[in-house]
Each structure stands twice: as C-alpha cells, then as structure tokens.
Length: 455
View 1 (tube, rainbow, N blue to C red):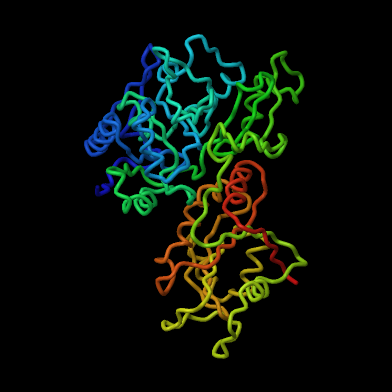
View 2: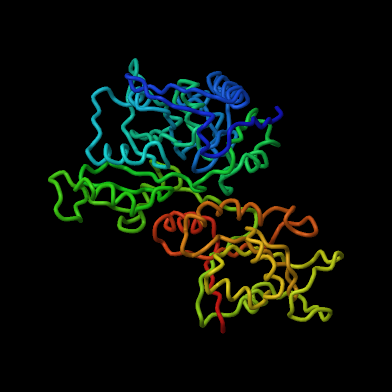
C-alpha cells in the first residue's frame, strides 16, 4: 500500500473551514476550498470504511481509526507496533458525540464541566466512564485496554475536528509515529515513519502542529474531591488551577465552595504508583516514549561541572587529530569518522554560553539568521549541530520545537556524510507552565542526566 499526502488548509487558518453548532449539539461544517473539501471527504470516507488516516491536530499528528469497532482500532496497534495494553485517546467533534459514548445517566462533576467549558476544543483530555449500547461497551476494550474509563478530547485544529464530524464517529488517535519514537508534528514526520510500513493510505497535511506536545490528561472521576493531572501537556497546571480558582472550585484557594477539589499532579504532588503504571488508564504512564535512534542525554548547567569539550572528550575518548586545533573550522569532506553531537538548548541560557565558548566564530552568522538549526560545525574531533529551543522565557517555543528537534538532529540528512548523530544533548528547562510537559517528555526520552559547566 502506497502512502499519499492529502493537501488541506494549514495550521489554524479557519477561512476554509467554518463550524456552527446545531440545536442538538451536533456540529455543522462548511468548507470553502475545493482542495481542502476533497481531501477531508476522502479522509472521512476512509475512516468510515474502517481504515487508518493520519490527521493533524494542534498537539501532534494522530493515527486515526473508528473508535467504535475493534477491527479498526487493532489496525492502529499493528501499524505503530504499539503494545496492546497502552490505551488510546478518543477524539470527538462535538458534545453530542461525547454523549453517545457515555452512560445515559452520567453527570460530569462541576470541576469537569468547568474544564470542558474552558479548554474544549483544545489540548485537554478528560477521563469519562464508558457507556453501554445493547449490553456492550460503547467503546471497545481494545481502546480502553479493559479500563472502566476512556480518555476523550475535542481537538481545536479545524482539519481534525472537521474530519471527525464528517466521518460522524468518534476517532481513536494516538500519535502517528512508530511506537516509542518522537511524536510527529508535520505530515513529513508521519510519512517518514509510516510510508515504508505499507499500512497507511492517507496523511492529511494540515501544516506544523501549533502546540507540539500531546494533550494534558486529567482524571476527575476516580476521586470525587480531586482533579488528577495524569500527564502534563498542552494545557499547563497553572492554567488548570486558574480555571478552577475562577469558579472557587480549587480547595487551596480562598474562599472555596463546598464541592471544591484538590489539584494533584502525578509524579509531583501525587505519588507514582507501580500498579497504575502496569495497568495504565492513559497513554504515557507505562512505556518509554519519544526516543530517537541517537542516545538522548538531559543536560543540566552547573558552574562546577566539566566544560562541554571536556565532557565530550571524557564520554567518547576520541582519537586526537593533530591537523586541527580547538577552533571551529569547516569539516573536511573526506572526514566520516567524527562523533556527531546534536545540541538542543535555549539561546539565552548558561548552557548555550558553554556551547558558544567552543564554537563562537561559527555561531555568529547562524544567530544573526534566526534559523532553528545551525550549520554542522567542526570542533576538535566532533561534528556539532545546534537546534534552538528559542528563549528560556518562552517555554511554549521549546514545546513546539521539541519533537521536531529530536527528529531533525537524528536524521542522516542533517549531517555531512549520511550518518545520523551519536548523541543528542537536550537542555533541561524550568518546570513552569508548559515546561512541565516538556520535561515530562525529556525524562522519558533520555537515558542519562549530565551536567555541563565552566570548570
């Protein structure tokens, strides 16, 4: 099966896709562009036929299939090589579709309603109890992996929401990458991972994902007096706290209502649970994720630690090359044995200063250009390439670029002699705002944490 990329309007451009809510809560979709309309009709028909389609969301690209039949859902696990005990998130287009998969007598808590009203459509997944139809679960166990709850979200990307509405069914859609690899944030990332597998017919190209990290997953049903953040993501802990506080539903705020809840973050203010991780209710709890082929080291700045040059020498013990001194020079075309080091960092951090001390001359023109990715530079016995995570003051940029940076530095195309890099150093960032979600992904991707400094 060959894979085809279908063109559609890019990003959050909404001129081509217009939504209007009907009295019954269903969504009406109008599409202005003939190209976009044709692509979305093809994708929706393919999904309705029980097949797979990769579609863009504001978080990452998803590998979608009808969430109502096990036959369609199993194709997701097979295509990704995903463990069958790793549950899927169900995507909906409107509240009527949500009602169709929940128990008829289910009433969301006040906190759940506030979060839905504030952040839907958007990068927020909420756990709900699974309903039943004709004595069978409304969502098959292949989606929930036998759990009594299902994660549901309403994406705000116009292409994703329109396709779901046109297919007229909830869509199960994990990230559209090979299982365990960095999540895809462009159609080209999906094509790279999936086109050679012969399992995916269509990828809908909606441009680069605006958030770049998966959704925040919240459980409001397990403990009535708690809102549990099981996976940090596109909606920050601070934003969730503010939404609850504005309705006097955060127990930690004053004054608070009688039905106020405590906000807990898994692995932070809520203890990790081996039982929960062996039998997860949401993706991202059990398995190592987001890892490129190269080893990933999480880099932390410490003024007393080795310089970057000494760290690399100590880590790799490369052969000395008398032809070159420590200044950055052009890489000889015939040189194919140099260690390839990718570095992802913000450009206003102490770690970046440590990098520039090795490569100052070669970095000047790149910094002036404003590009994300630097040219490959030669220093001592290393090829070094830097991928900018933006400013330390804007963790949203780091989130947006994280997966693209891991993929770019891990690509043979980026380097001089058709060989991928040996090591990627990624700078840790403060765990404030979406920085918490960035660090959650990096801690899963990294094999080691190291310190780089000035000593």
